[in-house]
Image (cartoon, rainbow, N blue to C red; front, side, top):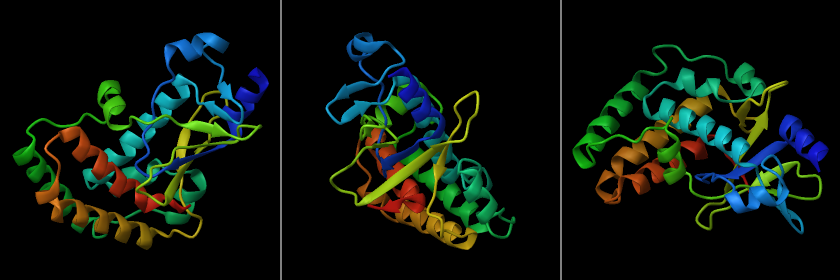
Length: 219
C-alpha cells in the first residue's frame, strides 16, 4: 500500500474537474490506514489530506494570478512541458489582462468588500470543497466531477524528493491561445457581475471555474 502511494505521489497524473474543489480526508478515514495512506472503497480511493492541500494551494495561486492579470505568474503554475511550449508574455500581451483585473477588483470590492485569500487554508477549504478521488487499482490519477461541467483538469507531480504539483494543460495549447482564453474568461466574469451570487465564496468558486477551464481537457 505504501509503495503504491509513493509511486502515485511521485509520478501519477491527477485529473480534476474544472472548478472541482479539493477537500481534506476526514480524520476518521486517515486513522483507518494511517495519515499517509489512501482510504480505498473497491476501485475508489481518497487522496491523502496533505497531497490535497498542496493541490489546493497550487490551484489557488494560479487562480489568483489570473484574477490579478499576472499571466506570467499563471504560466509558472503549469507543467514544465507547458511552460516551455507556451513561453513568456510581453507587457503588450498583458495590457488587456491588467485592465480586466482592475475592473474585477473594483466590481468585487463594490459587491463584497472583503477579499478571498487564495493562500489561506480556511478560504481554500470553503472554495474548493469537493474531495478528489483516485480511480483504478494503480491509483495513477484522481478525478472530481461536477455535473455542470464537461471538462477535466489534470495535475502532474514534478517533484523529486518533495512533491511539486503543477497543472498539466492540453498539449496543443499555445501561448496566444492561453492569453485569449484567459482574457475571455475575465471578460465573462466581469460581464456577468450582475449575476454574481450574494455569497462571496460562491462567487469565488464561479470565478475559479472560469479560470481553470482555460487549461482544462475535454472529458
